[in-house]
Image 1 (cartoon, rainbow, N blue to C red):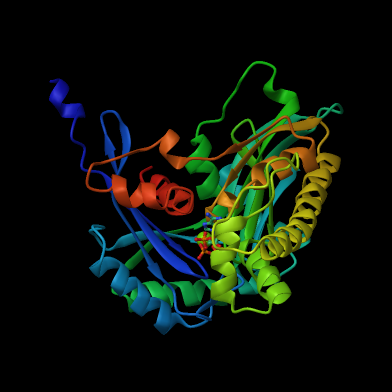
Image 2: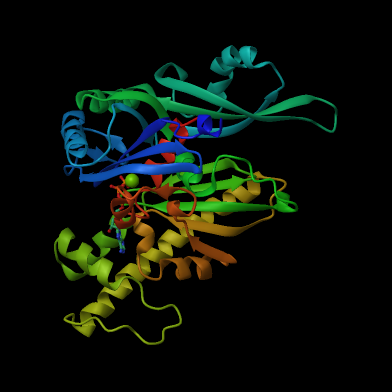
Length: 373
Ligand SMILES: Nc1ncnc2c1ncn2[C@@H]1O[C@H](COP(=O)(O)OP(=O)(O)OP(=O)(O)O)[C@@H](O)[C@H]1O
Ligand SMILES: [Mg+2]
């Protein structure tokens, strides 16, 4: 009898198309939780994706074909993530109504909340909960997602051009939160006045989300990200982007307490200092940007008074000493690296590939997890 609940073949693929890389993760549901069984990453041609949007669908399609050829991801149905200025997420309060009624009402209500024409957008929503106001009005809280139709069209074209089928589109930051924190609201005693910020740094974009009791209640995208640090090094040393990338990864930020400046064999100390200074300058701007976002969130909410915990993730989060700079700059109690392998296992056939891209795989894994439900 027990065997009936084992070996479920339910499987799902998450596809994360970025500026530098496209990544696919395949996740299978097993008796002991979801397991990553396939994983791969390929380069995306320069310029094919910009500011989180696909500009050259044909070039992306051919990268995706490569990805399928060179990875152990098997299957054609994919959940794709989107993250750019033309995907809007808003938490809104409306008078309580039944789901069916909301479905049509949202078409009329949405325009008040989104800075794009509703006619040009695809809308989706999720009911978060309902409550009574002090004056006894029955209200509901709804998470509204609006995505620009044309932008989604390019995503569909790239995916179909690679011979794949797009089964769902998800907001990347929801996928990131899912991979790191799970889907179930974490109702912890005393947790009402605290929230977790999730900061995902990739090459062209940083995703900032605030999660309260399992619900992502705030979401913002910034263009200060990994490439910003690289470009500043390239500018200050007058070298190519690729050369700067290498120096950035090797040198990173100085130790925060200023002690024991690491030795970097083969790099002149003057050069190390210039790299440190240029990245430090950009890091201050980055931290100010994160602080502004979190402060804005705190002014919008009546319940949460502090953000104590910060999960830092994405490939760009590996910048040496970035976590301690954030901890100091935000006066947060705890900045932890958000590791998707903390919640989801990987099979022996996928483990090496996942581990090699441990912080970069978060979005793809979260998208795949979303497809399991
Ligand atoms: N060890 C490291 N130290 C510093 N930065 C790193 C390190 N490893 C990777 N990065 C940075 O992470 C960034 C790449 O992030 P990622 O792989 O998530 O990009 P992407 O998904 O293609 O981009 P996007 O999602 O923004 O379009 C690059 O800026 C790279 O320099
Ligand atoms: Mg990315």
